[in-house]
Length: 320
Image 1 (cartoon, rainbow, N blue to C red):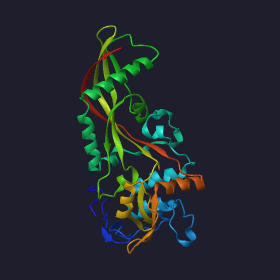
Image 2 (cartoon, one colour):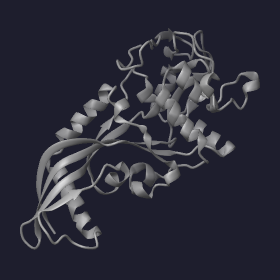
Image 3 (cartoon, rainbow, N blue to C red):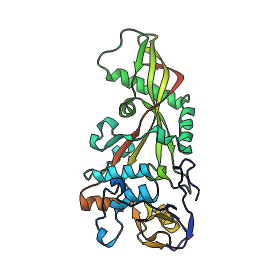
Image 4 (cartoon, rainbow, N blue to C red):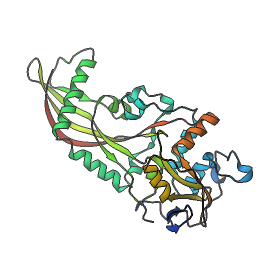
């Protein structure tokens, strides 16, 4: 198959056309020998039904790390599995709930970083898309709103102008108060890689990190933004209907039939078979919800990357 050009050295994924699920499908499996699951203690979550070899959700981190070479996906899945059961609310998922108000136990700012994100072409395309929006009318209107909200929020108004505004590089605080533009990033058709497994569809955001505020009159100010912070925000949750592939301890496959059913909001429940992967089990969002309800673990996550800064100049007048 076509895969990310930034995959780890030595990784080659087979593209195997089969009729395993009743429709042409693609199977993904590591071509070199798969390391033992117990190597380096990575097989942290033994199968609940391991005595008969049946695949379960607890096997996913090992399959991701060793079978597919998706280390980041494995880390995110391990974190979800390690937390007490909690479903994200609709407001938390959409961002209507401020990031700073999200339960801290389920918020992570360390797993996703720009050193890793830069490997993927679609992420850089998302960065360029959001940068191209920063001088638009919409961006300026959003920026005016952020400045107005800032003056309404602070208890003591600045007395000396020009006033230097520096917001630091905490993505949670930036997203809560100073985010003003974003660009959506999706996974590419026929590309199933670590970005697909860990983030899927997400967005790159821009927030003010440095600005200078000039007072023109008692009610008018001029704001000159000299630096923004760029970061990724994503939710790792299992809301709604979504097909997530057919899985075994050897790897995963994508069923065309299951994908078509997913478009119609129908979950595919039929297992399949592949000569490369053996018997494979379908996983849907509901599979994870049922697992969470049955075993009391599985906490939906709010993920932020670190912040990448970009110097620029944006000026906007603000009337209070």
